[in-house]
Image (cartoon, rainbow, N blue to C red):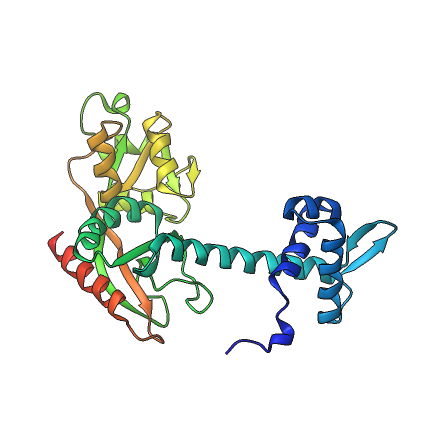
Length: 296
């Protein structure tokens, strides 16, 4: 249930408020909205009267937002952006049903998207929209039907479909390993590149190779894409998941430093909220990915 209409200002008045807060003056806002100065001023006055709160301090011919006005304008901007994104999804999807899926950037690009091509061909009446999220979130406050999650079954209030176990391999630019595969101790002596969401990733890998893992230093990245790019440019060795490594090896930018991938802790899951019924579109995606994950 939405709020009573008396708490819902008109879109023109909200656009006027957002433009004034963003641009600093009613004159600039009027130009941005293709309105007259008096039209913008009138919308702002209506908004203040409806809310019963002073949003602006009038200084001669100028306007300055009060603290309440600034807070409200920022909330309005977020709401307008949500409406704009919803409009884009509807316009892009047309008459087709749609699913909104939160994805991890690297896994979404290299593992999920290639498999969604077959899904799209099998379900031409359904479109999957994807947005990037790198951490768990509240499904009640985000417009996603499902998400890709990495780690353990530690996301409360969701159901899980296992997609892939994590397997990693050290990789570097060809010039860094001209002699072929390297022993773990030799790799440890290289500059090592780290991913901030995988603290201790290198240490864990070295321990699994039976090589003592001392505190390891080096550049830190927030995503696999820039980390792999830095490795390709010769900044150091990267510890990459299989889906990313295979793509880089195929392009010839990176080469493996060891012959085999190593299984490590962590699993990729599709998750969806338990408090919502699973509709036909989401059920179709779950079933498709279940089959695709079993196929490898």
